Amino acid sequence: KMSFVLNKLKTKKEVDNAIKTTEDKVLVLRFGKEDETGTLQLDDILEKTQVLVSKMADIYIADIDNVPVYTKYFDITIIPSTVFFFNGQHMKVDWGTPDHTKFVGSFRETQDFIDVVEVVYRGAMKGKLIVTSPLDPTRVPKYSLLYKDL
Image 1 (cartoon, helix red, strand yellow):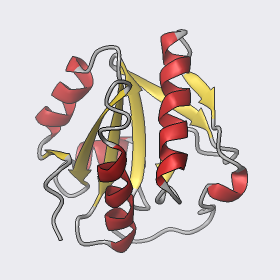
Image 2 (spheres, rainbow, N blue to C red; image 1 turned 90 degrees about the vertical axis):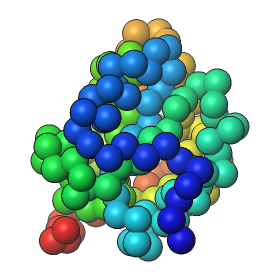
Image 3 (cartoon, rainbow, N blue to C red; image 1 turned 180 degrees about the horizontal axis):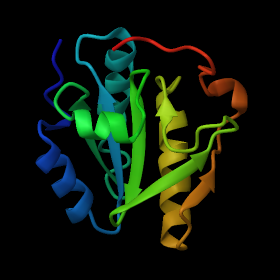
Image 4 (tube, rainbow, N blue to C red; image 1 turned 60 degrees about the horizontal axis):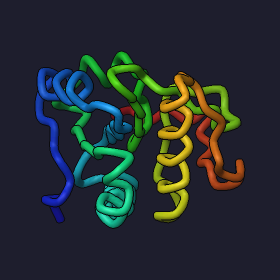
């Protein structure tokens, strides 16, 4: 099932543009592959929450094969991976894992994602570039030494 509800970015230029033009809102950027189970799970959560978080965030999805520059830049070795921005700045989140640059895997449920967006939004509005994840560490997927060939 293809995702029609979420905004799709198909090129590096489209990603650049979304990052540059999203103002005073969190830009949620999901990297993945449309036919991959984890990506489909995450997209389901993103679709369900898109309207609920619309005052705080804009959600976009990108296929890793279409934007290899970003896939490499964010060191995306596992999909799905979600990156957050605010006013053109990459927002980092301390998930209690060594990687603060992105959320790897799918959120367990819609509320987890909403909570994260809210914390990123509030922190960003106060000028922070890194925030602490509101999620219990058990709700953050652990992929320490797992590398998949994409």
